[in-house]
Image (cartoon, rainbow, N blue to C red; front, side, top):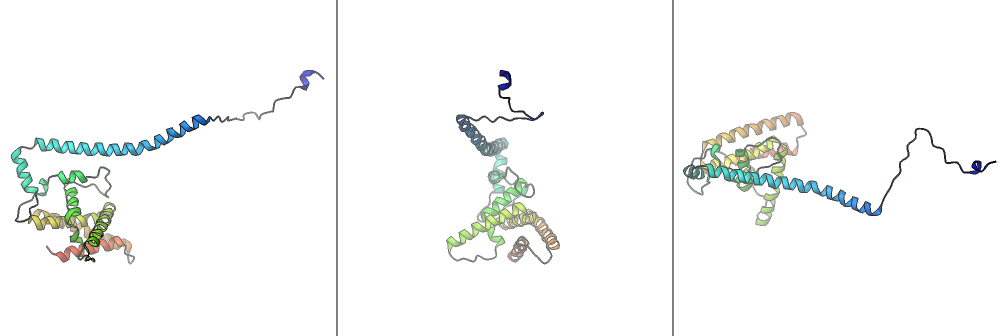
Length: 233
């Protein structure tokens, strides 16, 4: 026997097999975790930055439009869109300023359908002063409980309006009725009839789909429409 025969033979490998070698360094692992966390945190910051940039862009565009309007025209527009405490004035919905709605414009289009600038203004008015038009009575006498109830109802109505076109029409209807009562302007009353028709069509469609198992959302729209009828023109 020769010396070469006594040497250990390397283990045989199957032909065509692959071997993977995993290398790990504790220091590199810590640095890798830091990079992963940094990448994960970068996206929310980027989204937040995009929202801020979008709002700044809207504010800049509004300032540019305001600067481009002649002084006499701007004064006339302010008189048209200001909601007075007493007296009557004519309000053309096409001339409604977008100062309020610019703040509340949703850059992510969260609602079930796109909203016009006028509808953003109507929604803003509803959030500020038209909630009582869809609630026939408040179940609380205490001021703090009433405020808490109003806040909860507002959140619920806006959330459902974002997901249901009929509910959105209900809120816009209430806003139009409120503005029509303040301005004594037929243009808002005409818009109110439009949104009332959309709400009725939505309820009819829901009743056909749901049958006897009526959903809470359908009941809410029906009660809101009944409250509008109870308030009268």
